Amino acid sequence: MHENNTPTAPVTTPGNHADPSCASVLSVEDLTVSIGGRMLLQGVTFALQPGQLCGLIGENGAGKTTLLRSLIGVQPSPHGQVSISGLSPRKSRDLVGYVPQKIHFAPDLPLRVYDLVQLGCDGHRLGPRWFSRRLHQQVQAALDAVGAGEFAYQRIGELSGGQQQRAVIAHALARRPRLLLLDEPLANLDFRSANELAGLLGHVTRVHGIAVLVTAHDMNPLLPVMDHIVYLAKGRAASGSVREVVQSVTLSKLYGYPVAVIEHGGRVLVLPHANAQVGEDGCYLMPGGSTSGGQA
Amino acid sequence: MLTWLAHILHWSFLRSGSVQTALLVGSSAAVVCAVIGVFTILRGYAFAGHALGDVSSAGGSASFFLGISPLVGFLGIAGIAAVSLEFLGVRRAREQDVATGIVLGAGIGLSALFLYLDMTTTSTTGAAVMVMFGSMFTFPASLRWPAIMVAAAALAMMAILYRPLLLCMVDPELATTRGISTRWVGLLHLLTLSAAVALAALSVGAVLASALVIGPAGAVVRISRRPGVAIFLAILLGLAAVWGGIWMAYESYYWFAGHAWPVSFFVVTIIFLSYLTSVPLQYVLGRRAAKPSQMAAHAGG
Image (cartoon, rainbow over all chains, first blue to last red):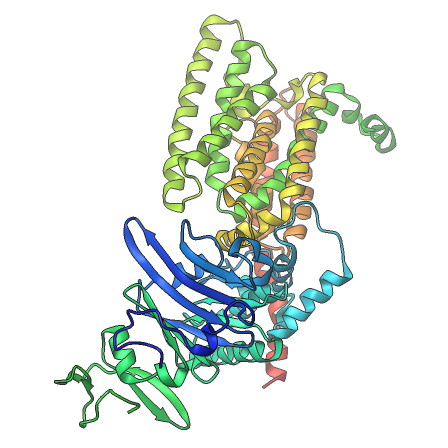
């Protein structure tokens, strides 16, 4: 894994960082952001390839949302270099789809899922919209990509949280982006919806070859589909493959709280483990004698 | 055209010049308020819309004192208030009500001053009632074209802003990521809202302006699935309220033995009843819409 014992040094996988200019959809180099004198991100460096689904993890206040805002060019005065397919964030808006944290849709909002996805195509344009077969096909393709066709003509405020999240992802996919950024898309979803949405993200990544960067507090639904993780702690970032990062010792140090990694039914699960104690070597000792140094 | 319509329908009230002016100015106000009202409600600016109406009373009373067109007075003060709201922080939810309240207080204070000056330094009578509650049958014919032009400009602005405004309404952050300046869109929306409020204040009075701005839009938003449909229905409802109100006020002269009731009362009553009707209608339409999806869910197991 490409990280020190504490995630203080910016380290990336060789495959990602070897040639950031050509193959990478997203290349972040030495990104530093401070707000009100407080350093939120310091020297963050990582890269994403096409067709790669990457999780962005870290405790509350670690700077995950700030990092995403820097990538979409709305964070004031970041230092460092962010390149999306060779372009700066402000010049690459057509290449990026963004799904913000929970959008509240009022039940009586007169807006259908179809209308929301249509805004994903041309919401930034001035003047009235004229009917266009091409626009309709583009909207239909985005709806089909997330399986939202059956509720496309329903009011978005009347749908379940999972269906609304699909609609917002379709909105983000409408312009066929190369990079999809999602801020806590699984928050407030039940088990079934969260797993279905994670599967959908994996499908979109594989089938459409889009690079996806997703933040999540509960990473369990995403573990089967993620192939890379960037984690933030104390303003610094480190990254590695899922197998490298998802280990008890790494996650426990990252969150400053005992975390167990177990395997059940062929799936790896990450669980908080309040009963663990700190051993002499600094590792958490799980009840029953196992340490948190590897997968429990 | 109205004279021709009067001839076809044998409606005597359409032959009156003052009624024709009232219908043209009132219709301009109804259409603009319907279009802008839908966005105003969806962006959560209903209180700001109401406040702009009240504040514009300062412009109306100033116009009597200065001897200028009331449309210019209403428009000027509502526009200044809209810019003030934007820069005092109407965009931030927590500060929105505070900023609106402060601007509202300042506007009403100015209004009190100008109404006092109207009464003490000029021979204007009934200015307070005309500014606060409107008097559509007293409009001069010269007001027709300025009102229509203000309405046309406001509608053109809404046509230009339609899609960015919708996106800002869904989520301002999402709009920002698409390169939309939410600040400019917000400011232009408030300025257009001030034009709608000025026309409404001119028609039904400053105090009742919010009824025309918020009422039709509030009623139809409940029963529409699409923003375009909501705007279309709000226009129909607004026009029905203004035309119905003018007709009833005209006829009330015969109903109440030579004492015609105010147009504003009838317009606002129609809007209020429509809003009440929309509540059960929303329930009925909601159940109808739910039935096919429930059947599909049962069919799918």
